[in-house]
Length: 246
Image 1 (cartoon, rainbow, N blue to C red):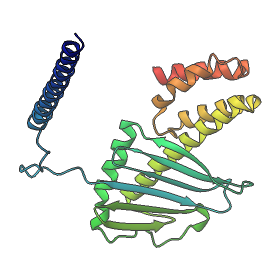
Image 2: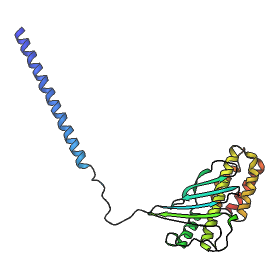
Image 3: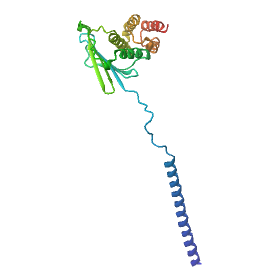
């Protein structure tokens, strides 16, 4: 009996060893097939287009204004070919400039782009400075970078209609951006300044001094219901909003 039991035990162990080996073999076969299928089905690496299509050329536009005696003594705007960029400005009494993100509206950027194109800036040698000098009005610097090319020009007074119009467009964009910054600061820390800021906004709107008043609609809606803002300023924001929405 003992011999038969030992033989049965040996046969059982042998069977288990064979079964384990078979399971391992099957698992390895499935893994190999799966890996082979994944490699076969994987998409081929993307190849460069043979149609000759080119990516849009990166362009940087820069506007800078300087007049040390002005309350805002320096303004710098830089943006890409989509009208997105930054504005920085230096105020008297502050050691460091303020810097904010800037996004020109489609309408404002279209006007600005048309003026750059009219100047043919990169292909021109004009400096746009008129014979008369008016340094007390401040110096404007225009710069454009594109595809490794870089050109800048400065003037404090110009008779070139396109250069003058371009500087005015950036001046309006700067006035609007700085005013939005001041309103944001007022809402958070200086609510009593809000009435003066609404007066300034109304004046800029009346004389066409804003880059695109419609960009201010969401802000004005918030101001008209913001209880942190004095009632007189809220009501004024509501009236300005109606003017813009007409």
